[in-house]
Image (cartoon, rainbow, N blue to C red; front, side, top):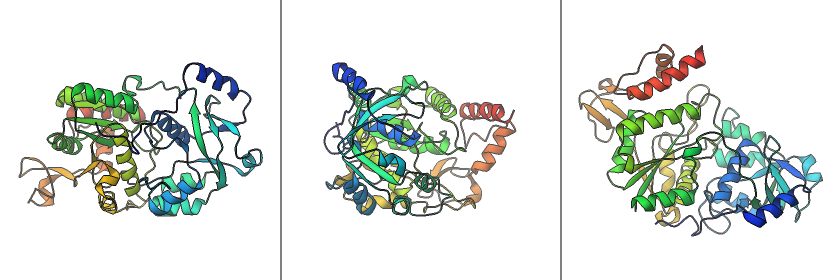
Length: 390
């Protein structure tokens, strides 16, 4: 099976006596509250999804990632994983001490030993990671709301975040790797999604399945933009689609606990590396992967920038084989799903609906054409939209 990034699957979760001792110690430590993004990063560090990271980044890694898309030790890494603090919080902290990391509800989760406290250059963070300083970009807006300082160091988790949703679909990297092994999957492809799977996505996934043993459908269920479709609705769509149209022994549906960063090309690299930790050998990169648009509808990134960025690295540096797909659609003349690479016909022969058109149809209770969406998926979306409207 493919090796984790850096060669070792990290595990920072305490158990047994060590857990009991950490819980007892935590009651006397200064508490620091995690944002939703920081909490999801903490969970992924703990279970090894962000291997080789063992905690929040110190300055040399933060700077190196922003400037070179590599950790200070030379491993490819494209996005910062950091914990910010306010100026007031900094006054009460010192390097070398331990602090309690708690969630927004006040539940203690982990102990962090402070290796370094350093100024947070938010302008540099935003410009390098997201390629823009426009605060209409959700990632940039999030960075500018962060604290004036960053705090780096290893973490020890003694209490997992308490999830109430998708419990049957929550699998750590060690668990997905075990499933792949039990099914005899030597080659597995991951599909990152924060949207329902329509016919275009289905076509891409099944093309990929022709060259690998199995497919990991890995929907992101952490924090997203307010106008993204809720994770509960998306999960119902995935369930009905897999039930009706996939060979179940060749597909694994498992949730990805990350928050969405909307960093476009850099996030495509990030998503690929993380899926390697989950045991995937291949990763699907489609049009405008992890992209986001300005208020006028124009994208912050080029439609294929997330594919071009892979050219900056040697294949062995990434370790995962990216599978690049163009925008897919149903062609009336071909009588099948297709992409620009294989379809010779005009745009007028293609069934292509904008997100706005689809949302308006769903609000009216209309099922989009079967060339665009499976009716079972459309019915789930219609029900969700009508509940929202009413």
